[in-house]
Length: 504
Image 1 (cartoon, rainbow, N blue to C red):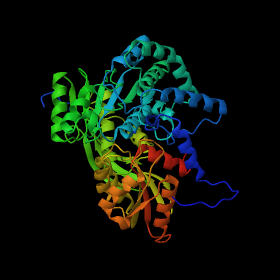
Image 2: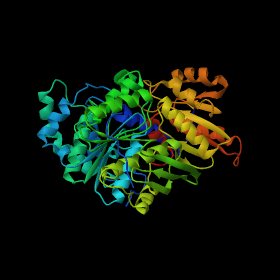
Image 3: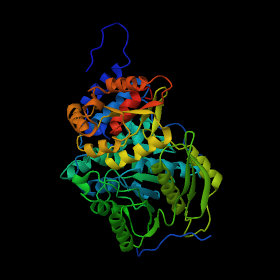
Image 4: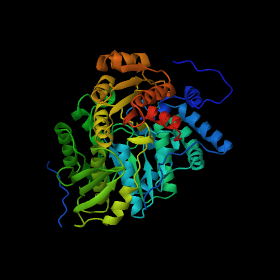
């Protein structure tokens, strides 16, 4: 790590020291937080800003929020699991089953869940519905996870919701073999906040898997399954087929299932589950899909084929073919919720759809946080996500030279991840984020050297140093060279880079 001269001026890179100090006193997992069925065939104001709140400006509110975070940190983190919904079900029963107070759209899959959830939320909000959205992990603030009316819950509301349910949480803790986990308590908070608002519909992303995920105490009217790939193989299975079996547990009786394009073995498992519970199925590439897409300034222009017909001239301010496919899945899910394709043979209002998609944001997903040189953040953390990110950055930016900054978690397929980026990274700067789950930079560098060769790998243990080094490498070609930087490897890495780049 490079030495810094001592002087009396404040160093903007001290932000990284603050990040590390904040995380070392918290649970590291709290920081992570990363044929034969009926077929649905049709016959015939959106959220603003990036949705990433800063720390509360009021010192008392900030202290209270930190106290809640610390209490949650004392529980099992999201990577320590006892596969059961028994504890969350017991808590919600005592709370009066708030999750039954509204219809819901339930989302699982390996990649694209959060972006798809944000698109669904934007579409529903554009049709004047009050929405609740629950997603994970967060990029910068824990309050991002619970959204009301297309905006993150306020810190005050987050604190109030926790305090309201805390006595009941303690009651259930005393009755169960294991205390409620961090994710279970947060899930109960979301469901309670949605009922208290009240919302017209909840958009709920699973934490991990499906069948035994804490969110799976709802009966989603629409079940969405984004593309399945290998991730969390120690908990979900080592093949797409095994993972699909776990994730298909969110498909409930008489629901509508919206399936993104899937590996054949995985699709077969999901369709079998749909048959068993008499669910209606809509499949990307058959009942709906992307008809055309063109790269546009600031995003892409799409024509989507929905369950009710065609939706032309849709501007999506997100990059990559994978986001176009996420958009088609989101549109089909909202159509299904409104009964398009089953009860109604028509399209939804095209102007409303256009305005909703045009306002979609997905922080930390091909997000530009600086120009000259351009710095892009993407939260890809597994090989499938890396391949999608590599294709997207190549298509959308066409950098003459691209420098990668990678900080990954130790439990991921790091080699497969790096191999996906090898063709497009001229150099790679390996680093780590502040989480205790982060892979040691030297270990990450050893794998990177095998993939890239020693001459293309640089090690900077501190993320701020890594960003500075990558920007310096990109600037070596000159101001008008077209070089860029891509920061990736983990939601935590992206969130911390976002703060360091002044987006906090």
